[in-house]
Length: 89
Image (cartoon, rainbow, N blue to C red; front, side, top):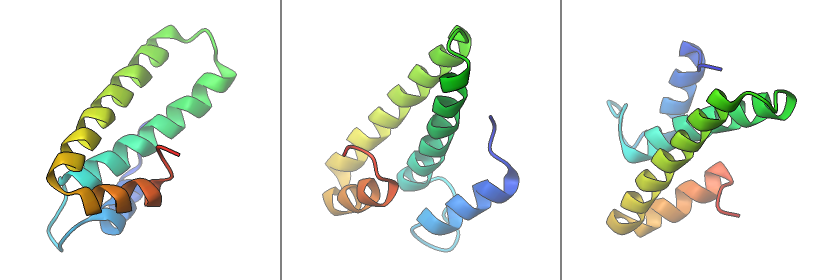
């Protein structure tokens, strides 16, 4: 359920704001979204995995806080990011 190094690099290159950006809000949200999607798939086949469900809820809360921050700081980037990720639909 963890992200491979290649997938992380792909996400970073797709969502980075400048060449050396590895930790901006957009990159963090993209990585969290990827992890959330993987955990959601896992929980579809393992309904009784309550510890993973708890981890999923923590990830969703963290992503929600980052999205809220991004929305207050840069509304245009927020709109662009949620449309690219396909969330809040």
